[in-house]
Image 1: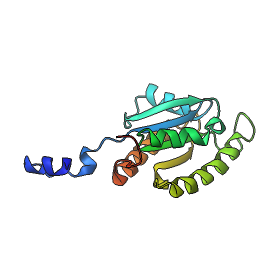
Image 2 (image 1 turned 180 degrees about the vertical axis):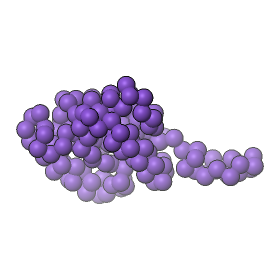
Image 3 (image 1 turned 30 degrees about the vertical axis):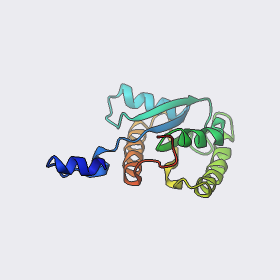
Length: 152
């Protein structure tokens, strides 16, 4: 409907141009959050629509947090942690990887596109990677469109 309204005004914008997704990013305190912080202090440009949630470890992201975020209106969820073998809690990110695979299957089962969930390993020194991942994920979510399962 919004696309039709825009086209009536003479603009040729697509729904991807109009749609501003809501994305929640759960970021590990030791690596990914520090990478995001470095991106900010380095003034690296990336999409500002991602809402960051700092967690002590990516393994502390309970699967119910992801499902609840999507059911409450988030269009996408990014989980980012330390690279495998570099977790400050030894094997926390290995648990995260197992949960992520289970969550992708669960999302598909309950009718939410699994591509609305993404897992990335980003270290504290990878500010450019953080910005790139965020921008790429925003593009991916824009292509998927609004999350129909979330609250309207």
